[in-house]
Image (cartoon, rainbow, N blue to C red; front, side, top):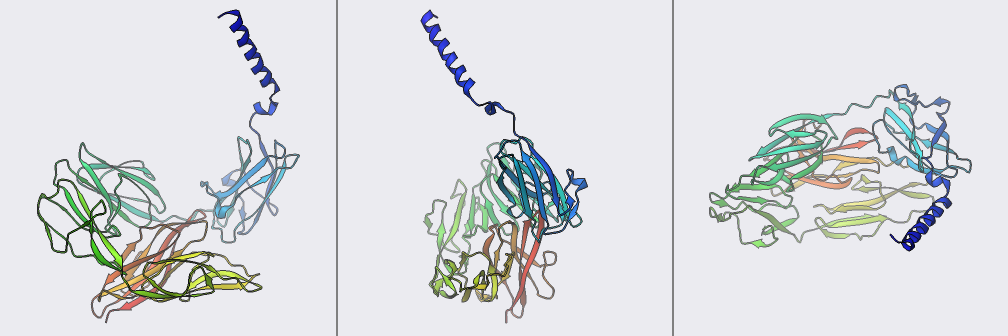
Length: 488
């Protein structure tokens, strides 16, 4: 290196050192600290250890005071059940320390907070070690979580591994018990050049995924089947309904008979579609000759909406007009302006509360209905609650009873599973005694679910919807009203 280059490089180093020297000292300071000087509810002091947590009443106000080592810095906090990281009822906010670093946090606990052990965690800007204080509600014991069975079966040669609530390989045909709400990802792996086909939920007979990895949350007893096809084995011919329920799976080593046209409420069958979305010239009873296909083929029922319409009457609503609509039409309404001294409370459909949200969306069912916005006095407190209701059933396809359910969960609630129970109506239907349980594949907080039940002349069948959800760290099962229908 010559003297000229050396001089230039030396000048660059000196310039960098000068810049560094001008940086504020705080840029190199260690992480900030939070100090809690008091954490109380009335005169009850919160504990630094869960085992020593005091018992508070629901609705108590937590009062946490302390200092942040950085004046004016942001302070963050949350309240959650012991062992959880998701705040209850959205209690996780931000505040700012004063010019001296002092701060105060006041948190009113919900009136419906479940019994259990909880904590309030306080941290903030650049804080390395947040501070935690514990308290209990009621007995302080976390409510017992119900269990459900998970059964995994395998058709063909392949293996299944699990992550989540269980880590490791699952032997085909094995059944194990886990807490309701447990989360899993099951991954199917074919051997050699064999092929994974799909996952089927045996409760509904539906294909729930064609991907090797399938994630879900356990609700009621569940049986999942991984389907594989060996290399060189005859191709599968699969017919399924528009909701993915499998009607026929058969290998093409022999002739395959096309199944009957599947029924879909409010729709009429058009054709069978291949995986490329192209209609096929296949009719019920047609025969697909053996060895027609060398690779697996799936035919899905294609339907179009019938011209039948159903009357929807809106009261105190805007965004959609009262009138006749086709089945499954999605409508969205908001409440009309409230009168002086009143406010919106909830939506009713045919006299039953269906939602506490101002914007209400639903799909037109196969019956006439009235949707009405309800109001209360401005001073009245309206507490949104979980909603699960059944509409009155009716006959379709001559001998089938159609059951309709609708659900709505407020913010802070997580749906695990919902469905409809069917029984003979002689006892109050529950998950423990229902003759038939139909599980929805949807876990949306708001939605509708419809099933059909075949009946013989003279039979009366009852239907009742259920919903399993998580709220404040507790797993809760709720049921709708019970409806009955006789096939005369």
